[in-house]
Image (cartoon, rainbow, N blue to C red):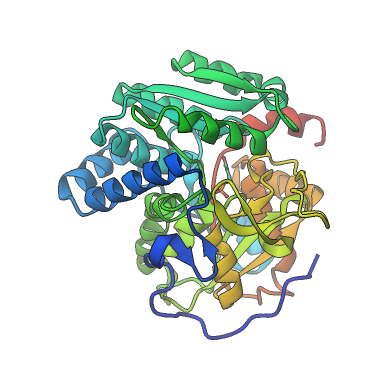
Length: 401
Ligand SMILES: *Cc1c(COP(=O)(O)O)cnc(C)c1O
């Protein structure tokens, strides 16, 4: 599907991916569209976050958790055999090697530490496939907090292993029976629940979505991916910066964290969405879950249920900063199909000995499609964030491979 607009060249704009403007605005997107009691709670989170990130004590404690508990820094792995086949030089930023197996732990450790600093005793979270729920349950256990995770009833049926994992870690998993009983409804329910619990609970959002300050705060907690990769590229590449920086996009947190490290360089930033969940490539302006952004909608403005083989890409929209980066021409958003993603997962497994998450396989599918022809001329250097490992997808893959 090549329905993405062509490159506009004015690449590194100063201030891109800095702080959002007043009330969390990224261009015309973002904001804080929430009930009054949550507006106040968001204001408190914003204030606490600004204070914490300026505090060397907080930054040091987070860096220690990321190193000792999550296993950071993650390696930058040259994909040697696959690169030879594709005629490009592909480097993988290995978020699959973090504790709990995906980038989600970076954000969750940051927010859990912030919640403890704010004197909150409980984390509330939504989850689709369960990855963010497992990361939240993990961070809560580590810091002595309680965790309540909202999950659609259909997802609970599909993701039994992650449900057990969360319970094993001491979290309460609350089934959501409204709407389509999936991620969108779990998010709405978690926000509703927070309204009555803002005094003692922190809402731990799992991607760069939701009301201000979440899109910005989550990006800053995921920035560690891009910052590490930038340093690793400087050491590894002759040019210091790759030609392309590629990541998959559900809500957009691993991509935003990766892009943040390269926003001020000439690298071309590419976000890859699922064909059936392409908020940035196909969405229309709307307001959902507290922010103004691009969402898949029907002609009446009703949210369209997304579909992707990768549960983590099954969100009907995209974070507001991605919508803004798209409008600026600073990043581009492409889509790949379920079949392309499965093919890419098999190819990575057999050339590099890595079984990727199906989400991450979307980013790789774009690289494979464009290598040596389309967007990626022979000899290009490509940095791709491998957002997670594929263990959670084995039962899906078993039916297809
Ligand atoms: C949740 C998830 C994603 C999608 O979330 P983003 O916020 O877009 O990063 C991608 N990959 C993996 C492995 C995930 O678990």
